[in-house]
Length: 196
Ligand code: ADP
Image (cartoon, rainbow, N blue to C red; front, side, top):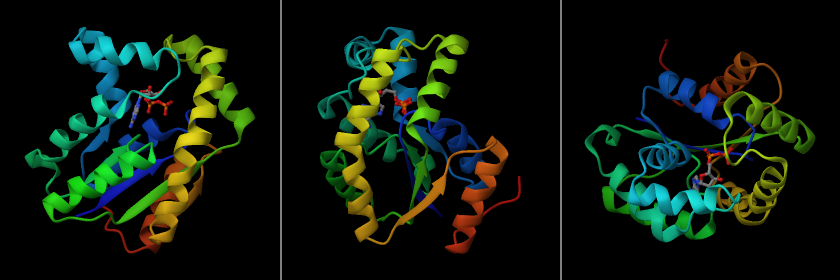
């Protein structure tokens, strides 16, 4: 019954690792980025509003993000645990998540910080831009997203470190290597892992 967060700069490989970790920990992965992107694709009201911020490399406002996460975390399939990828991203979202979890009587078990070197990240994101054509992967927007991450999201690392929850894992290397590093770190903390 694991409740974990995955934090890291854009391009660190959170999405890829989130899918694998959700299998390893047997919990659903919830990615706010994926939820926004699917709303954009479907042209929902939320998608239209979110796209404006995402395409500029900005965070979607908390007024649109918090309710979405609150309702997702109150669904039945997350009662036994969850992996949150890309939320919280701001100090205000940390408080919101604390409140949501207090309401369900649960607390976090671990925060995985996936770190990566900035040059490596920019290279990866530009490559992804060519391959996937994501509207928020142009060079200017990438640079802005990294600035926003440094300003708004890095303070979360200290907050969760003070709570003794942070496990830092280097995101450089092959996808398999990184997964092995993360699962080893989780295992060392006594987090239950399932064979896939
Ligand atoms: P990345 O980690 O590469 O930035 P994500 O898929 O996690 O990609 O997020 C894509 C975009 O979705 C972000 O740049 C932001 O605009 C929006 N977004 C995702 N999660 C949040 C959040 N918790 N708060 C605000 N905006 C978010």
